[in-house]
Image (cartoon, rainbow, N blue to C red; front, side, top):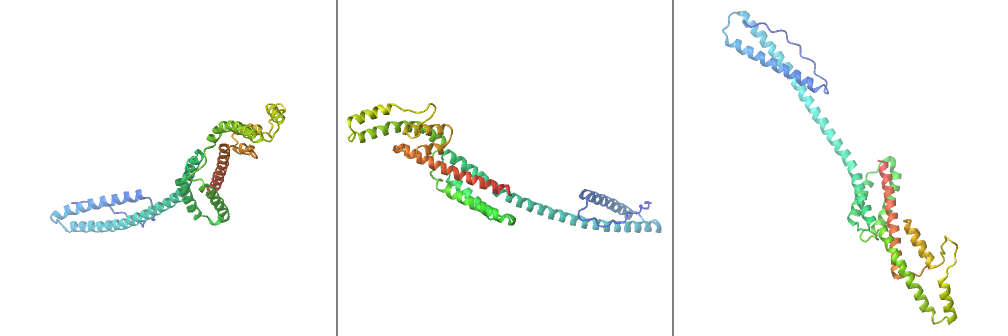
Length: 299
């Protein structure tokens, strides 16, 4: 005859929604194994002939134990379904949060990348229309994401960015040459300036100056009196020397300023215009970069 099964543990109270998943699943597996074992035992007993009323009593006890076990299993199954649903909800919320944070980080990252590409092309003297459009679009996106606490600062930075973009827009299709290229061209242009201006001045004045004045001009043109180590900035030669020295220091602004009030050859005048355009473009690049850096620091 089959032995009387040991008393089954009372069904436990429903676990908290956020209980340990692993422990709950292990308990459910144990309950399912015990249920399967008891079901097999009942099936074997049902196949045997009834010997006495005691066997019927044992069989009834087993059926009651199985019923209790099934009830506990159903309760735990409901808990498992609830836990699975809560886990799915948490995963969905986490995914939505991650997507939101990624989207919030993607816009400034794209703006910085576009700006880096624009600045590199502009420094090299290459057209940057496509990069400019991406930077402008990213800037408009950022302007729509201002924070309430920083509204005034964001507005001021937005104005600075728009002013810098307006200056950059005029150079997007045809930027001036790079600073190194402009500096490399100056020596040949300065030499052409030295050769052209004296000849032009001599030809213009030859008809009105007497012979002794022309002779004196030739003598004084060969003599330059100045202190040792100093440059006579009042003469064309001195101005060209100052411009060349400034270029050696990488100072385009000082170089073009040294040529002020000079009668320049068309080639050197065009060079000076290109230097001034390069200075304006570099100033716009610096202004936008500073405003962008300040905006990134607040996020």
